Structures are given as structure tokens and as C-alpha cells.
Image (cartoon, rainbow, N blue to C red):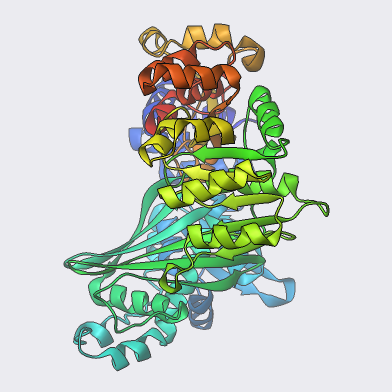
Length: 558
């Protein structure tokens, strides 16, 4: 029996109330049962009973008491405050069965259930509970107030005390739980920020920052000190930025964590970049390219020599694209050397060099040296200046395939960026074989996406009908989807990311046009007229019409 049928038959919910709730759900993305409760047509107890019938999950008995010994032991493994915020509370454990009993008001909160399983190693036995009862049970948990011991601490003067505090169990436990929570929510970055009277923790999930917690100001300092201690940074240095790293394991996930600190008005800010060793697959097929783009990339990297540029802002996926190309090219017959700042992932069979400007190992100096090491393929993490550009071009002209990146807004801008650096036009034409520009957009959530229609004004404003007609072979039957928001996607409507691309092979026709036109805008217009060329936005709209992402996501990035 469907959930809707249970609501109608068991609790006599009217069709008109359901219709009203579904209309409100489009705007709020809340679960349909929660909306019915807010409308007053269903009680919280009735909602829990309906969910119990629908899902086959028992309701927690009224007279249950949580044992003190269990509270103390579970506090060491789980962030109870976080669980209660997510409408969950652990109530009992059976070690012999490797089971933990959890009461919840949200039985669809799979991310939280994964967190509990990973933290305890036990399977979950779920019970349903009303939010009111959950609040009552949560009051029986005594949360350690470990901020009192640091309230009187003058951080600026007592580094020794701060170091001791960073080694205290509550601080260690909090940071461990924070990293565990970030892994369960698929976060790529953890931001710890200091403000006048508080600290703030944010996670970047699928490219967007989300508030997670607000902390006592002094406890924030203790957490930052713990992070600096793990990263082998100087705890006493709060006036200058510092960079470091450390590794850790969360359940079966091995993480390399890059740490960057920066001084701010009210303390320090820290960003931890989470690099998942096993999670990423560097495969060109998984980048999200349409077939014509995929074929073009394979053609570009099959050249024996020349330079391929990948462009885009920070965080647009350039490194992933370059690593995917290198993984495809990596075999026993070729020597591949990379120069990176930093080396984000270690690739088997590839010689990777970490730039160290403080000792004189710059991109340019490293590039000069590796040319004497007989490489077939060279990857330069970024062309930042004329010197690096000139050496990279020289390498491309002397029998090496060179892959590198630039920071430009689109593909054609790359050629003109090299001119701005002082590179002669004839050298650009002789060395460049192709340019790829990219951005990253969020994917529609596969769990809650539903088909929607676009307003006529939107289609006309962004010429979606023209895109559909021009690229109908790639699109097939158009399908516009949008996520409502659910526990699987943290109520955003999006889960996962995919890249959109603009690219061209720099053939003789384009080289001639580049020399003649001398203007970025004119060259850009010339490119658009080529039959098989798509701009970044057009490629994004192709993915919109395939139901992969939304118009607002494409407009957010380009």
C-alpha cells in the first residue's frame, strides 16, 4: 500500500488536503507528511504511525529509559548533538549482535545512519519516535561543557596551555566527529572561521557552502590549534598564513587533508581540503563529456607533441581532467613527468614533482630540469608567468606532449591570455593543438528529481529551443528535471557534480583566423559559427535538456 493510500484509508486525509500539501512541497522541499502536520490535518503521532505501517519500522515504546552507562560510552563515539539536530538519538546497543538501536523522527535520513554505522561498526535497528518525544529523551544526555576551562585563557600569551588543550579528549573527539560527518556528507572542504563572539564551521558539499555549527569563540581557538598541531604547523604563529597537511582514516576511507590557515581580524581561519584516496576515478569516460567532446579530447592527447590547455577558475575540475588524461596516456612505453603545486593525488607510474618556491624550485626551474630527463609527456600544473609559458612552449615544439592550465573565462580567451603574457603569435600557432574550458555544475538528485516544465520566457531568454534543435542528436528526447530536496541530498535537490565544457582543436583554419582577427570578441564570434562548436553555457543547456542539471545551476557558473 502506498503512503498516500495509508493516509487516506487509515487517517481519512482528504484529496484536496493532499493536493494542497503537494503544491506547498514544490516550494518548501519538505516531506509531504511534515507539511500535512504543519497544516493541522495530521498529528505528529499519526504521521509516525503512518510511516510505521508504510516502512515496517516499529514505534519506540513509551516507557523506555536510556541507561547511563550507554550514554557515557556512546558519547565517546558519536556526536550526539549533531544526531539530535538530525532528529536521531541512539538508545541501546547489543554488542553480541553488533547492533545499535536508534530512534528517529526522520526514517529517510540515510546520511546520518551511514555516519552512525561508520562510527560504531554496528548495524542499525530503527525505531520511530515523535519529535516531541525525541526532545524529551535528548535532555537526559549530559553534554560535556569543556568550554569553561578555556574561557579565561589568554590565547595570545599562553601557547603552552593552548597546546595542552589541543591534546584534550573533548577537542580531539570533536574534530574526529567533524571529519567523520564531513565524509558522510560527501564534503570536499571544511571551513573553520573566527568571528568576534563565536566560531563557525561550514562544509562545502557539491561546490556549495553549508553552515554546520556555531561554536564558542575559545573552543574554536582550541579546535584550530588541534588542526595546526596535526598539520605540523607553528601554533604560536597567528600573524602569517601557514600551509600543512595530515592523513587520517575514517572507517574504510583514507583521507589526505590539506590545511591552510590565515590570520583574520578576530582570530584565524582554517580550511581543510579533504582528498579521498580511493574515491576518485580518473577516467575520461566519467568526466561527463558528450560524445563529440570525448572524441575530441582523445584526438588531442593522441598527438605526439604540442600543447593542450585546460582553462577555468579555481575549483572548476581542471586537475581532475588533467589526471584523467594522464591516466589514459600512462603505459610502460612513455615517461610522464608532472610539476604541480600542490600534488593533490599520487598517480601510480607517473613522476610527480612538488613545486617549492621557498627553495627556488619554481614551475619554470623544474620545467627546465625535467627536459633533461627524457620525458614523453609533461604536465605543468599552471602557467603563471611568461617564463613558464616560454619553456612549456619550447618543450611542445621539441617533441613533447605538454598538458597545462590557465585561468581564463572561456576557451578562446586562452590564446589572448598568452599574448598578454608576452608570447609571440607565431609561437602560439606553432605549439597549441587544442584548448578545453570547463566548469562544474551540480547534478539533479536521483532520489527526489521529478519532471517539470520550463516557462516560455526562460526558454526564449536562453534560446533553449535553438540548443535543442542544433544538438538533438546528443539530447535525444528532451526531459527537464528538478530535485524537490530529500535527506539523500541534504534537502538541496542536487547530489553529485558533473563538468560542462567548451573546447576546440586549434587547426589551420582557426590559426589563420586568430592571426587575422586580432580581437577576442571577433574570434569568439567566429568560433560560435563553426558547426560543431558549443560554448560553456550551451553545453550546460544540453545537460539541462537531458535532465542532468538545471538552468539555474548553469547560470550560476557561466
